[in-house]
Length: 382
Ligand SMILES: Cc1cc2nc3c(=O)[nH]c(=O)nc-3n(C[C@H](O)[C@H](O)[C@H](O)COP(=O)(O)OP(=O)(O)OC[C@H]3O[C@@H](n4cnc5c(N)ncnc54)[C@H](O)[C@@H]3O)c2cc1C
Image 1: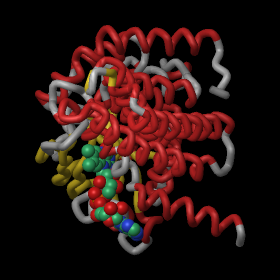
Image 2: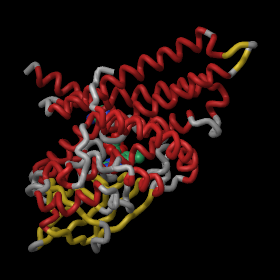
Image 3: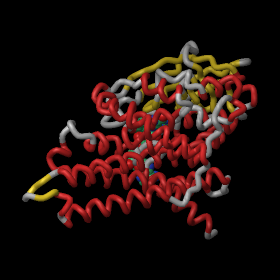
Image 4: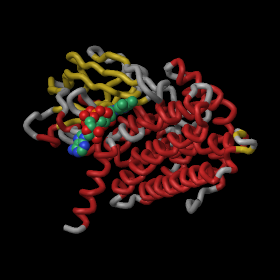
């Protein structure tokens, strides 16, 4: 590993590894089976200050480097993707406030996100606008010292359980992407409620649902940045958080590989461990090659963010695409190494494959990432 960590960061990663082994891994199958948000695990992450990592010290956070955050997400995802998503989305939902909020706004919301008392959500997607986020229809109309929001967001992680919801809505329908504005809508605001909750293939302990806005009055003081800044805020946020999804994918791949290697050493067929066969060894080697390559891309993207490199978004997109494709390939092969047992819920690799799939879809599908990467290439040559 090329990345250099300080002594405190190394201790933190070791602490997370122990915590995952003792407290997170034993809950993972149950969280998947029940499909219920694991409040006990959220509390555990909060108590251990893991949810404080993405926030600056002046607002009650740990001010961790992006690379350290990515390593922690990876460790969590090795055992439970749902758990890793709690940290990912705490950063995703809060980043618009950190990027565009005033000092007062940060003091209002960040400290209780850093302690984990509150959860965050990021509400961009709508039924008619996924990859084409700018096609959203949720409206925000200024009325004195409030905006009145009407519309529907869907597929929102932490819908109904987040206190701080970053919501993107149209304030000027004639201005295209410059007509979108970002707001913080707090849980309990009249006219704002949870709609349908989704029943999903993977990350089943994470609550995904609709957010409904019906004449919802949001104070002007909750607007992030100026009218029309919303799309830029939304995209700059995703540029910074995609490596988190890449780290989640990396952790899932590593967890599946660890399990496959251990299984290949103890499963005996034809009077010897299956791992003694070159056919299985080559599969394990290819899984390791892909996973290690993904790790280098993920950490590199984190380092670019930490260094404030101007083109870090390019490397975020590369890391997210490669790591999520790797997670699918490696979990698929892990099931193959386990044979029929891999297909059974008794073993974790089938859950890992289901969890891996979402990493190719959310925070921009891998088709959209490839568009981002190709456009950057073309821009470099123009
Ligand atoms: C479990 C889950 C959690 C989520 N959490 C959140 C959240 O917290 N906040 C939030 O705002 N959103 C969230 N999303 C939404 C997610 O980001 C979108 O689902 C995703 O961006 C894709 O949008 P879509 O589902 O509408 O697919 P579509 O945009 O309809 O895409 C369908 C297919 O067409 C492809 N496609 C679309 N346009 C192009 C193109 N120009 N070129 C080539 N291919 C293209 C896509 O890659 C995809 O394969 C979540 C989704 C899921 C499933």
